[in-house]
Each structure stands twice: as C-alpha cells, then as structure tokens.
Figure 1 (cartoon, rainbow, N blue to C red):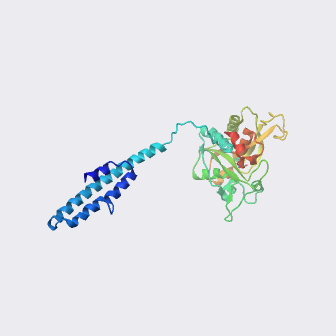
Figure 2 (cartoon, rainbow, N blue to C red):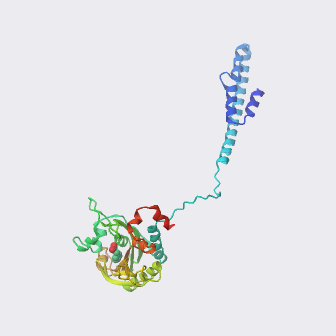
Figure 3 (tube, rainbow, N blue to C red):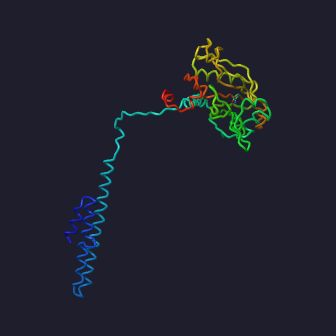
Length: 330
Ligand code: PHE
C-alpha cells in the first residue's frame, strides 16, 4: 500500500502518472492482485477484508486524482510561460495602415464643422423619390433631374444622387434650430477622369426660427471653411441654380496649382469650383411643414477635395485600391 501511494506521489508528469495508473488500477494491476486474494480469505473474514481493500482503493483514487490536478496545473503554467508573447519586444517589421485619403479628407471636413457645434446626421443610401427629389423642389419631369441621373430599383426607390435628402429627413424629425452636416456616399451615372458612379459628399444645413440667417452667414462660414482646408486662397461666390436653394451659388477657389494664373487643371480660368450652396428655398420648408424659419445649405464632393489637397490627377485612382497609391498617404 505504501509503495503504491509513493509511486503516485512521486509522479512528475502526466505520462508517468498514466504508467502508474495502469500499474495500480489496471486489469492486471496491483489492486486487482489484492482483490484476487479475496478468494482465499476464509469466509467470516471476507467482509472485513473486502471493506479494507475498498477503503484503500478509494484512498489511492483520491491521491491519484489530486496528483492529476496538480500536474495539470503545473503543465498549464509551464505552457503559458513558454508560449507567452513579449509584446514589448522590438520588431523591425512595420506594416502600418493608414486612412484612405477620402476618409481622411472627410474627417477633416467633419472636424471643422463639429468644432462649430454642427452635429453629424446620416440617411439611407437607397432613398425614395420624395426625399431625393420631390421634397427638394425637384418635381417629377423637372429638367434638373437630368443632372442627377441615377440607378433605380424595381420598387421605385433609387440610389441617392446627393446627400441633400438628409436635409429633408432631419427637418421632418425635429424642428428649428438645426445645425447639421451629413457626410456619406452618393451615386450617379457618370464615369470619367473626374467622375465615378459612387462618390462622397458632405451636406450642410442650418435652420433658425424667424429670419435670423441668410446668405451673409453662409458666405462667412464657407469662406472660413475653405481657408481652413486650402490655406491662403481667393474665394469667389458665383450665382448658380439649385432647385432647393434660392438664391444659389457655386463657390470657386483660386487655382491651387497655378495660383490663379491659369493652367490645365483650372482650364486656364484660374479658378476651381469646389462646392454648391444657397439659401433654403421656401418650397423646401413648405414640403417639410416648416413655417417662419430661415436657413442655408451647402454640399460638396469629398473626392474633389481630396484630389485638390493631395494633387491627385485621376479621381478613379482613389477607388482602384492600388497599394502603391495608397502607401503615399501614410
Ligand atoms: N445637392 C447639390 C449637389 O449634389 C449640392 C448642394 C447642396 C447645393 C446644398 C446647394 C445646397 O450638387
């Protein structure tokens, strides 16, 4: 008995323990041999003998189980130690990722406006006719819809052609004052050097009760914003048309490639068009049920900003995922 106990206690590995298990508890093991003796024990002593054996067997089993737990715990600790990763170890491999230039540019634009207390809104990319066109004063058969040809689903919904529907969604779920920007993907049937079927816009909308805001505020904020984005450039507001703003303007900056002298990028005009804006058209306020309010809105193409900031000649290259291009923006 003491022998058996000692052989269990002296085990140091699971393998050794397994060997001992066979030796003691196995069919031909030491315990089996003890139990075999039962046959030759005289009748009256059999019971006491058997009870004694069973007690010993239970004691051995307990020792064995304890040992098993102990060795397992030790082996686990050993494994954890040997497999530990030293995170402080210096590595010469560094494949650092970077933000895509479009995302980076979007963040910069969003940061400017959130610093001025604009909140960020979003809307669905699959829009309905009401939010994308109708409520924005673009009735069915309006010729301006042609400027924004898009992709339609069989249920009549469409891929939004601009982020302006977020203006409608925001106004319909709340009331003035509103001060939001809405960054997001938009879609048009277009594909050339400066157009891709999917691109990103940032929309802006400010609405106040009464006649508190007007074109002057719009002009101030956009001028400041463009200086923040492009540095020391000239900013020019040019009369234009959008169905959802009146008056409307397109905004140009002096060409950052030739400093306004005229080059290929600015088509020798010295100016680069960077965004559209205007004072919210009363028809839009009427469509969302707003009364006695005033507001302005603007929208810009993020890829265009990214191209100008990083001087990227072909817009399509932003979406080709070419690692050689992307690596330049680390
Ligand atoms: N939605 C217009 C476009 O996509 C941009 C715009 C937004 C113009 C808001 C005026 C006001 O071209």
